[in-house]
Image 1 (cartoon, helix red, strand yellow):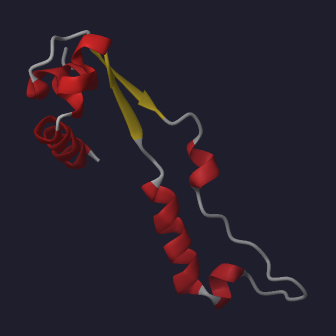
Image 2 (cartoon, helix red, strand yellow):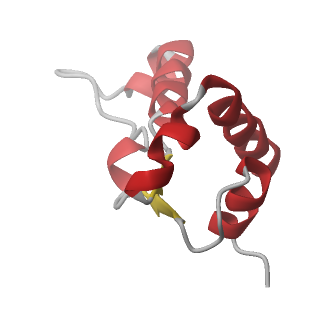
Length: 94
């Protein structure tokens, strides 16, 4: 079975079981929620739709994964070419 850490290990030439992928713990804290505008019956989303959408986009930017490696492989994982490979791979599965 191919897991995300093993897939990253394969594309980075780092041994399997040397990579750990950690998701953020609570996605809800990054989700944009509509609010009522003070002294009004209108909401932020209804009055400033584009602003609300921009806030949501910023929140999605915080939805990320930490890719960790055993100490002896951290430098390799941090190399620009290797990090770029990992980034590009993760972009294909989002």
